[in-house]
Length: 208
Image (cartoon, rainbow, N blue to C red; front, side, top):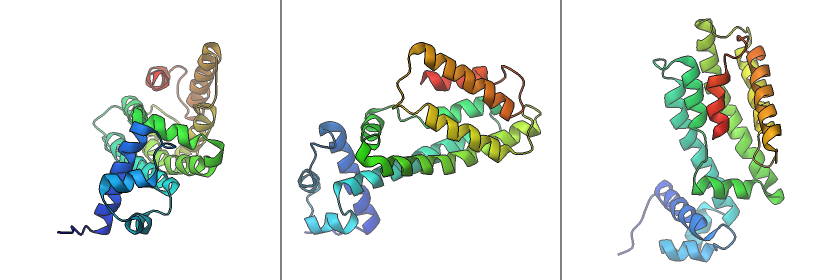
């Protein structure tokens, strides 16, 4: 008997299978036929949800971003966690430090996928900035940070961090250390913090 699934369930099933195949075989070596055979659906059903393999990857990135931000939100909004610890844990929760993350970053960093890279960055910046701004506002209330423009300060810091520390940038160990120290130095001043106050909070993020 033919099993009929609702649109969202079918869409997620396609993404689950594609995710598994992309990680196992690689994006380039996985065809839409491989996905169809694995799920056992007609080509028309696949194209109803996704127009191409790239479209599947795009949706996969969006789904993963949503999952990451939801996970980060739980930490960022938990006021029982000290402000600077919350900052560290929120940023660490956004790491794509697994097989799926490696595959996605390999694809979005390709020149032909520049728009996909920009979309990922915009999605993260727009949503993550709000979470970090909430942490900064709590830091201001507690006297740890001093700025009248927390959202703008966070936007400046995060925009720079995505550019300077993109995995495409190949730094020597010495250059990377200098970049990190310079980032911490200027972030503290933008947020109106004491010198060295961000060191212990930010160093674990760079180690990842």
